[in-house]
Image 1 (tube, rainbow, N blue to C red):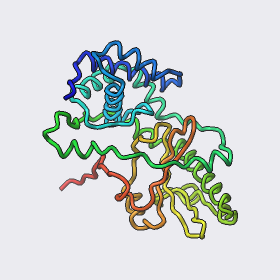
Image 2: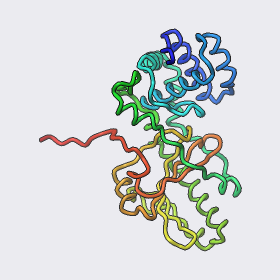
Image 3: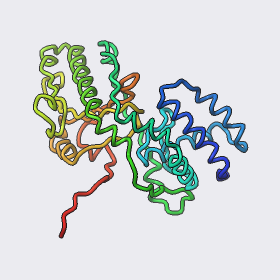
Image 4: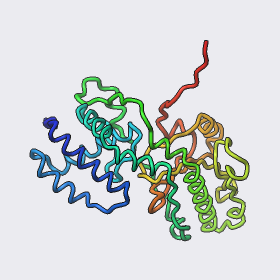
Length: 287
């Protein structure tokens, strides 16, 4: 049975992770391998696998509090309670990291126009779900548990409301769809791809009207982030309803890593079927 991490060990790995995150938010180069090598000297016989597991746990805590997390350390939710406590303590004290994250959420880094080859090669597979999230909720005997995180500023949600970034992501998807149809030899359909949210306004439940190779319509909702593939996104009740009503033609395109190398994955059909939808707010009326 693995040993619980001590407070000294947890503080060491959280400090190092947040230092790497600060480098990342500043756009500075750093070596995860070198950080892991130096960190191992401070820990009590923890191997690389154990250290990576803890890095992924830190990502899960950051995700829950609405902070970006490091690409390559996919969130893993069955974390030690002490770890969540230490992460929250350090975030409360690290005003510089908070400033970097807040500034980045409101910035709109627009990458250069992609080439045809970059466009047609931008689609990748969706991320693999974190199966531990449901298992931990169901297993009350597990020594780890999901924590109740205090309410605060959600910088992932703030980025999701960045209209300039969102519009740039939608334009990327318009170009992607045009390139896809041209590659299929359907230039006449490529010419009809519509940036619907710009032409008809918001509220449709989708952003881009495109087509399958046989001419059937596809309705595409675009969600854009400068962060990693696993970064959660936010959908409206209207988008969920439209995805269910038009499941046979609906696609959510998640555009990620928009800062450096934009790529995307597609979630076709009703969002209830492809996503775990968590409520983040309520409409209230006095009774």
